[in-house]
View 1: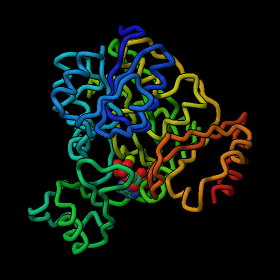
View 2 (view 1 turned 180 degrees about the vertical axis):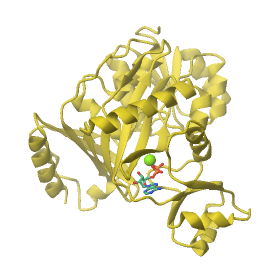
View 3 (view 1 turned 90 degrees about the vertical axis):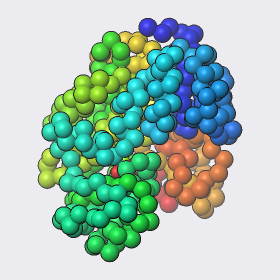
View 4 (view 1 turned 90 degrees about the horizontal axis):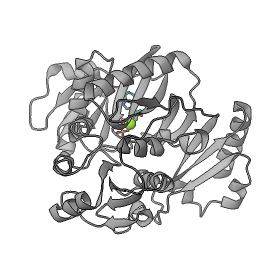
Length: 370
Ligand code: ADP
Ligand code: MG
């Protein structure tokens, strides 16, 4: 067990890292953030910010020296970096698990090997002949195997010509996935500590727009789906011998849950827990990293999350005082200075005693945001 005021390491300095710093600070830990961006918002909140590339040997040595344990805020930290750090200090989640989540092909192979339902798909390489059965998947989505997020690195494919063009444009290993008629999207965030305790947030329901999360309802209030999602997620945790926070994204298709993808970390759709749960996903991350006890049951109250993308600033700075006057509204701004379109600048969570109150305020908020 790693006890406060130990120092924890965080690879990655965006909003997820920033909330990790806040949760760690609340529990009395210190945090060193490694992120190459001098303007890192997590770096600014941390006790120390190492400004260096994720594979910089001297910076990794310093991180290992200063920290009792290390975690990451995103899956694209080189797996070699995690493996190297693990020679010196506990790294949670482990390089092996993060490595699988870095690559859609490996992720899907794992799911298939466990018999967990997933979208029909095919792995494709640029500069190699495309197997004829690819056309069975049309209409489809071509996704780069690595480094996609928020719908980036994806192409909508209606026919063979579009596939050939998109694969050439990607110039990278890809997965072609059948485009499914989604009845809904859901996510489950859970944590496991090194002692084997597991704790889950409630299942949430997600709505995306243009491949980016727009809105999350917590809890989803779908007990049957939640049981099914937990069973799947716990099987994944066991198969990966996972330690840390894991988020599983689900599609609901013809009444059945399919796994879309895995994130080896807290997730945008887990942000309601910052305001509606008695243990948030970042505290789960700290507790799992440090082998502290995990809550047996996390109580939540109704909440709706609305993401604030840079687009909201197009018409000028939003009227924060007027938003803050709404009942049960919790404003989160991440401290980013440049509100580019599609950039996650912050979010709002609306809590209330019941769904009617939450939905009324959500409606007013939507109207105000335009
Ligand atoms: P990212 O890594 O960008 O989150 P996802 O694979 O989760 O990539 O895709 C982003 C969103 O695009 C999903 O949440 C969903 O709304 C939509 N999407 C992705 N794959 C499919 C699919 N096979 N069928 C229908 N919609 C999809
Ligand atoms: Mg996704």
